[in-house]
Structure formats: structure tokens, C-alpha cells
Length: 411
Image (tube, rainbow, N blue to C red; front, side, top):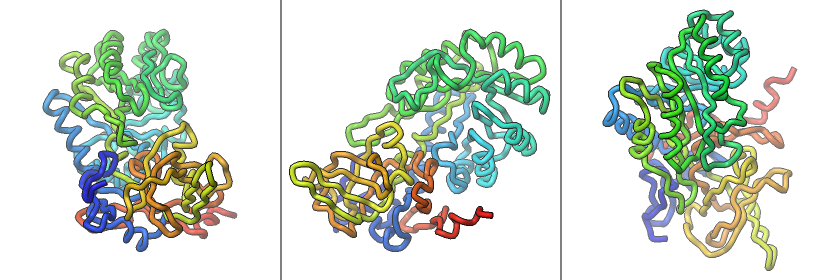
């Protein structure tokens, strides 16, 4: 790989310097590892801003009424909420905890949409206390709770449209057999119920995540429009990102075209990007601890993280790339193994590296979505810090957990 060139899986503005070392947000990744330790989540702050502005501009050029709603579950971090609120986005949250972070990040309560297929009464009360703008109602039981707790509350009805996009089963949500929303047969009764004591403002549907084919979005708008005439039409998120150099996701402009093409005039169209705002903005850095070369079988490169900081490969076989941060390229076929006591703790299979050695800093790109969100304490591993980089300056926005943090809740 030539000096300076990087694939589109890396954050915008990333480069290889004259010595062939990776820079993210103007910061040398090897130096970041020395200063802040590993594993660590590293984000190019300007990448997130640029993608947020691309969404806003794409919809502004095509529609008078629209809202870009950050799907906070992708990266529920106060600093990210603060940044995206400043860029003019709304946000959605799927739990009381995500709501707490969004409020701490400065989102006005009226610009927050409260999701969740099984909102507890405690979460509902917390959202009502803070004046959340809209609830996305997911069941008849939830209608009962809201009618009792907050008559007159503004709501959207989550519809399960029976549309199955091409994505992994675990991240598909629009098919008929789904734990989310109201099936089309139940929608008329749900509309009638929700209209009695609540203010039904619109319809919502979400097809799934990491979707490359845009045609289902056009069909989705048509399905929802046939249900009724409402001021808000939320068509969810799900736009794919590039996890490997061969991935070519649709552009934001093409995505906006698809969402708006099937929507009627006069409605406010909402979309809920999450992964596509933050996924490629982040990388995870590790330190190589051991290298096991098994002749004629495999080379295992073990790092100081794994399923505690990136659970997606273990959950549904998500594919990632990996490189030695100061020696990109290489011809040694390797498997990147985590440090946890599970044979399935494998981060990346069959990746070419340049003579990996203990002490090397290894980087996996496109981990900005769902890495921090799904981080856990398996094997009592402290969770990694989150580091924002911009114009050569690095700042910790979420500190690394300590061993003392692991016992702080003990009684």
C-alpha cells in the first residue's frame, strides 16, 4: 500500500504519514496507544460532523419538511450526543439510560423520540418527567400504559411492514415475524386505540440495519402512506456502511431520494441514521500480546481486547479489516484473536498482516458503531476509553474503567 493511501473504511481525513504510520484526526495512532493505553476507541470528530452535515444537506436539497434523527443506540456517548445536537439533528433513544445520556449531551427533550419494544413504567415516567417530544408506541400494552400515565401524549405508531431487506437475521426488523411494532393486520385496531386518548402524530417503521438495497425503502413509504394521512412519516434508518474495502454502500443522496420518492407531499419525513453517522468515524486500537504460528494451519495474533469491546463478530459474524498501525499491508495470513476464555473470541479471520510481533499496535477500522455501545465486562475486563481526535489534538471523552470500578456497586 502506497504511503498516504487508505481505503474508505477509515475515518475521513485519515492518512499514512511519511513513515507509514496511521493518523486519525491528525493524531498518530501509535502515540495514542502509548499515551492512553489499549484497547481504546478512537474517533475522528470531524468525520461525524461531516456525515451529519451530509445528511442535513441531502434532505434539505430535496424536501421542505424533514428531520434527521440520530439513532443513539449506535454510539450512546454524551460527547457524540453533544456534537450531533449542535449540528441540528434530533435523536432517538431506546432506553432510559440512552435518554439520560442524550439529555446530558444537550438534546432538547422535545427533539427526542422514545423507542423501545418493552418500555418499563419507570422509563416512561422518566421520559414524561423530562418532556420527551414523542413516544414511538410498540404494543397495545404500551398504549394502555400511556393512556393511564399521560393522556394526550404525542405518539407515533410503530408498524411492522412485512418487508424483509437483505441483511443478517439478527439486525432485520421489518419482517412480519418481529418482536417490534404492530403487524399490518393489527394496525387498524392500533390506530383506533391510539387515537382515543393519545395524540397520534404519525407512523414509524424500521427495516433493519446494514442495508445496501434501497428499493425496500421506496416500498416502505408506499405501505405506510396507504395506512393513513399523518403529519409525520418516520422511515427508520439502516443505511449500510463499508466494513471492508470491497463494500460500496449507497450514498446519502441516493438514500434520501429513495426515502422521499414514495412519500406524499406535505408530510414531514424522518430518517434515523446511526451506524452511517458514526461507524466509519471510529477505529479500535489494540496491542499485540502473543503471536502463535501453527505450521500449515494458521497464525493467531492475540490482542488485549476482543469480545468485551467488539461483540459483533461473535453475535452475527460481522467482518472487519485489521492492520498493524505502523506497517500497513503484508502477506502473512492471520486470525486476530481476543484475550477472553472463549474459543469463539475471534475479531477478524483471514487478514494479511506485515510480520506481526508482540508490542505492535493493531487497528480495526469501522468500529465506531456498536463497539462502545455493546462493550461489556466479560472476564472482568475494564471497558476501554473513548478518544476524540481533531486537528492533531486528542481528548478523552469517556475514561477507561478501572479495577475499582468493577467493585464500586458491591455492597
